[in-house]
Image (cartoon, rainbow, N blue to C red; front, side, top):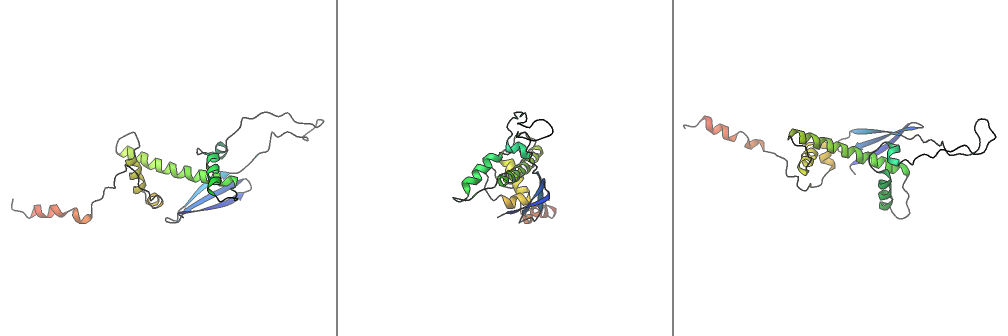
Length: 175
């Protein structure tokens, strides 16, 4: 594996997710709010009155991605995780949130570096070439992503023994 994941609970409602890449040994921290409220369920009790059910207000359903503050689909990742484990094993609800957070962070990192490559080349559209330059230009992403990018080309590199060879002959020539 290329990374290790560790969860550290700081308070009963808050947790930190530490992702450490084994090649770079640099921890990346995600702050995760795990506070869950149980309001709006109805039932007896409360202050004063004769009991009975409390008036319930119908709240709009909220996705797990919006609860976690993520853009990546937590429900879809959870479904894929359940499909990838063995027959009778279970997948916890927070596993999908953590995995979605990691995927979102890596995607944002690659897109930011590819956008910087676009700015350097003065174009407005990210192409596979810009993705290739972004991934191969970053040491940690290069170690993590070993895939060949279709249409990405090659990284420009001239061996240092070939660089100053032509300037030596021009100074000592009789022409």
